[in-house]
Length: 210
Image (cartoon, rainbow, N blue to C red; front, side, top):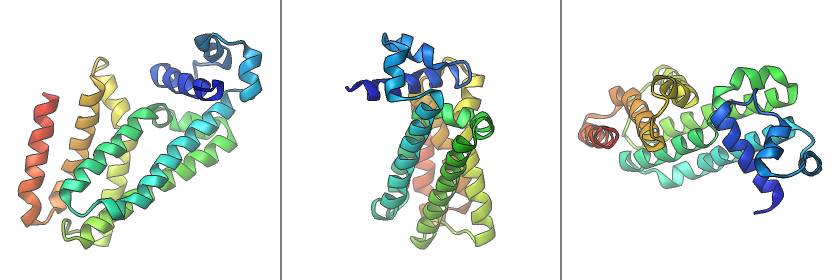
């Protein structure tokens, strides 16, 4: 792995473990065992590192937006797709724990954060529209807009909330619990003929998380 990639990965892990505010460029360099000058050669400060990590996260969700209509043809596919989305939220959980700080601390980072949140809202709307067109969901436009907001709120804040409740929670359990919450939000709008499959998915996930 090249030094630039190592810096990004170490930064992501440190931000996830300790939050964005307490971590400095010097701490990142120390974690990697490189000089501050070496880090500065690749990134001129923490904000540049954060900008790249936010862009990486945004690109993952952009790819998912393009893939959804081809990959999801029913509730079974939606379940698997939700898992993938929650994996992204967990991988970059520091972003969603620090939305206010990142948004207010730097105008440039604030623009990236707003673009990311718009991307996520658009992706969730695409998901709901696709499931409605497939007959999986029965939801009108007003309900769909509210449901999209609620799903986005779970995605943005679920991991932080759950870790506060249970600091030692296993990451896979955290992922599945987040997916269960999303499925529960969708469940009132699932067409009757798909209800049994939804209940089966929920029970299976609950058994896995204990």
